[in-house]
Length: 221
Image (cartoon, rainbow, N blue to C red; front, side):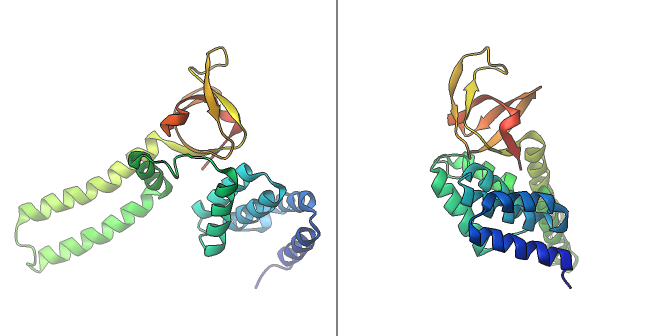
């Protein structure tokens, strides 16, 4: 049964939302954060922030909702609408197949890959045990290849992080504003991060944003 206080908060949020009092709705959401599952909290945050016109922060929260287990037609449509409003090219809609592959790979937890591979290995072992696969060499090679997939996937997660840039900011040649500016990182852009140097981080992909940016305006996923 749903918690009574949570029900009251939801009713208050709905009332504020219908009245167009999005600032108050946002304050109430943040104040009541502990009463919601993580995914639901970020979905609600994204919805209110989108109504306020803060599409970069809205996208960040929709992406977090998906990462934490909520994926429905509603959140998909809201995320796509938000990306349309941002109207930018980033890692999620790059024309480079390598960048798209990286985005898809890093969006899936490597634990999920391990789980899938374990099921496949179990099936492979049963086939070998009942002589459907007769060669030990074939069994060993296929097993090794399957195990390599989650290990490589885990390596990608260890090497790179994904983030949403929350505000427009300059891109620099090095980890300081004393370096020359080489471009602008658009608010709402989804990027893949690499090396960190104190308050700065290197944008690895997409290549159009490659360079150093301030970490303080990034929302890590």
